[in-house]
Image 1 (cartoon, rainbow, N blue to C red):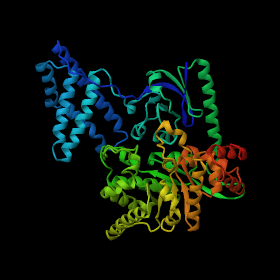
Image 2 (cartoon, rainbow, N blue to C red):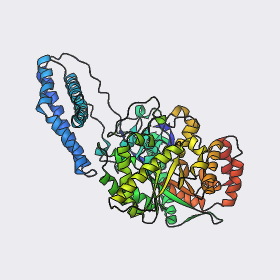
Image 3 (cartoon, rainbow, N blue to C red):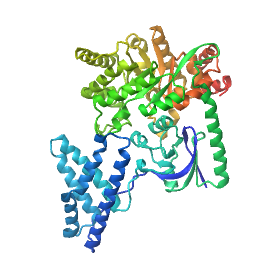
Image 4 (cartoon, rainbow, N blue to C red):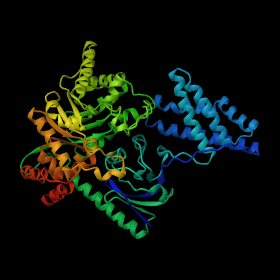
Length: 570
């Protein structure tokens, strides 16, 4: 039995077998073989296994993707079965007595390069097919099959170095939790875990080395610990802790239809962060009073192609209709940094978090931006839509983004398509430059939504994905509180509202501070809503005002946290 300490990233307890989501080493070296027939037979067996894999993946994908999206696996099957492709590999083995792994790699590299050299998008996409198919074929040939979370058919806990947003988007109901070597509470894998309502422990350092496939794991997403191969007594203790946690969750459900009001009558809105329509049941079940952040980038991650205007329109319409008269804040495309999509490869940058991402990318690819805005505008008549632009640093950027939005609105109206006149347009406050100039932004925007994950990162010049500087993720540092006060006060001075969609909004320690600062809207993972509602309903706004006065004069985050804990029972 081995205990590993990490960072608690998503609450809950899970006990299940480990499933290592680790890419195998597919390195091959060229060598001359003695038994050609044996090598050819091994190659053909790998082709057969790869064909079966593709069929299985397609059947699973067909349940979640459209016919067009699932058709990519047909293209892969055709590529695999191409006589020219297989023939060239066999020829390398038979004529040159080249080992099978090197033959596969050599032919695939040559064929992919040939497709990439053709100045036509269709053929360049085929190069990606060659690479995908050959990687799977090589893995089967070497006896190192690629992990595929979509094919999991028993209860497991994922163990990985890290999980990308696209990895987490593939997790099915059999995944009961995950543990990773790296990451923090604000990494996208952690955010997705909270959205999926599964426990997660990140920053476990060496867990991929310490755990073997099939090991039993007890994962504690409350305390941030992982027990490998626990004994029976430990398993029973975790079962009891899990049952107690679930009972507490059940008790909180009594607050689903309650308002969020302090003991002295100050009301705020608790709304949900979602990644798509699939998250709506969780939002409703947890008493969300709206959607405060719709992360639209996941629409772009679910397929190898960019989502069409029609596809986006249908999703936005579904979300707006589902929420009825409750507000839905949609963030326009926010990729770059640690978020990448297959359909839009981005050039490598020295520091992608400070590079072409979010609205900056939208300005470079106005065609993609305008398509999304058209879809949003068309859907606006089906609910209470609010649009916000991410990564805004200057007023000129906001004016440009809003100008493009207005141009597309005018075009739609000219086409005879109805568009709501009640759409609010705001920005995310995540860059210190925008926070400092909030008093000027507030004259032109309809609202602010603070993205604390990035605001903290940029204020402290500390990559939130780097465990080496994780101590600088300090959302309760007085410097952050002072920025928040300026942003909220600036909004209120112009009669606008201020919300928060960063992870800080769902933190228990944050609630008293944010109430005292005057935050109007708290947007968080749906699973955090009821606990925050219970806490806010137990505190006094006037007392929190006094708390904030003291907190703003503290020198360190530790002082602020101690102050909150000494004032409020958390």
